[in-house]
Length: 169
Picture (tube, rainbow, N blue to C red):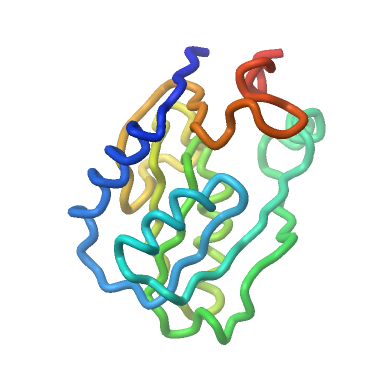
């Protein structure tokens, strides 16, 4: 799998490409941790969204996933109360839509809470998408690469440039 390393300037360009696409007024934002934290913050500031919530989703480990044929149910480690989403047009933000499992799970939870979710990512990978014609409502770029964002570089116990991306090891 090809790896693409982005700079902060690249991220600025992606955000600038997203902003004119928005054709709705958002009353809330759900940021998917951890990948959506930085793009969500940038978009919240640019779009003046002040009702910002987080969702944390965990799927079974890769080995368990292979046994389950990618049909494993997500575990929501954190999710906003229904009352915080009910009746609100909500922008759901993450960094990338690869398989689409995380975003579709969060989108479904927002719908179940009575919200109107619209999904947004910096990168959409249609080649890994498990959901047919379902895609993000808003995305800045299409890719087939493993994207390394500037906030992932040389920080924490697993520097992004020193380890193989998931599935490459």
